Image 1 (tube, rainbow, N blue to C red):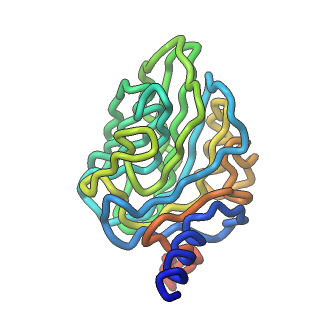
Image 2 (image 1 turned 90 degrees about the vertical axis):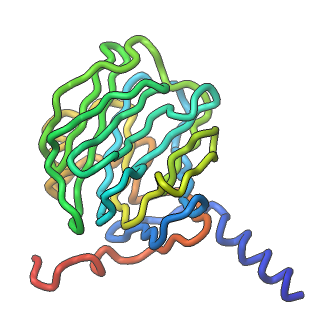
Length: 229
């Protein structure tokens, strides 16, 4: 009977649910090759344009994955990866571009947005409201097939293949995804806490997800300095 209760508890932990996570965050307290969150998109479609925005809080100096989409055709369908402080890599359909000189800090909330337009192939990173140079990735292609969207781990296979050395440790919040390229004004509204249109693919205010392993949902207030306003 005890074993049945344990198995039922594990099943409940992994069951997908929809929540308004406004003011909350996912805390990933330890590095691992198992702990992660699976996000369920509002729409399944072919993507020719993408914007993903999120906020990350961490003191880890090693490489870590911030946002990972795998597709049936490729594990790195759309990946925001941070090899070290101030440097971000964007992978689209297995091709990567590196973006350096971006101002972020340890142990504070950093706003990160990534955009990609298949028509031109142009991609760009925005960190704390400041844009990177624009770089070309996979012009004329598209993100096709049912996506596996994961926080906390980097996918080396479709929905799996996790590596402890690439796991995220810290807190993630305000994850949104759009099937369009947001304007600089819209990204500024997101980055600086203004009013913005929530993601129509992933919406933090109405997010369907499943937690797997040691991941905690907490109030973002626990990460704020007592003297901050």
